[in-house]
Length: 228
Image (cartoon, rainbow, N blue to C red):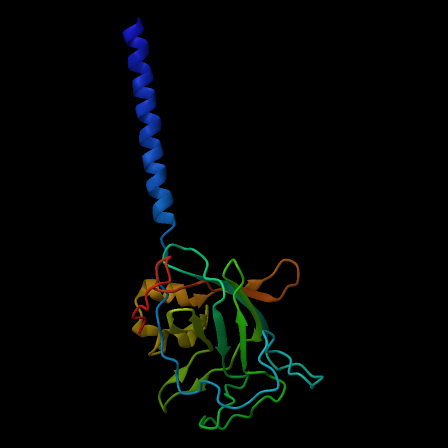
């Protein structure tokens, strides 16, 4: 009887141990983040001085009117490959206004600019790697005579000892996504990471989307990786 009891205890402990190993493997896999796909900075990174560059692009300092367009909030975290937050990273966004016009001297688009739109903003991530911007859905614009770029927001992330990383956020449900040369150059998995579904927030009703950006770095931050 004693041998039977010992055998049952051994089997039980083995089952628990096996489950623990399995769960440990799952936890380890869950703690690995896929790096966000790098994308071109584009020709319209801001070069013109602005009154402000804060996280609310819907209002310009010194102007009473708000920007034209559908207001959205985009928020997320900057992470490393182990899904750990990257604190103190500078996150910049820039985009076209609702008409598809950039605030850039070399933008050939004849559309009018919106004097009440900020066009460019930047924030520094907190201890949890978090950031948040309030902006609008940008307009589409012609990149060439045959190519119309879909609404998108440019992102640039700079962190200590890490090469500057650029990518772009796209809006789910936009028909032009399917024909965009830059977006379609990515794999389906990469596209899923940069296309964001904006939904009304429960407390405000403002369209809100989450865009986590994973940098191609480990937890040490000692190396300067190739991110291009």
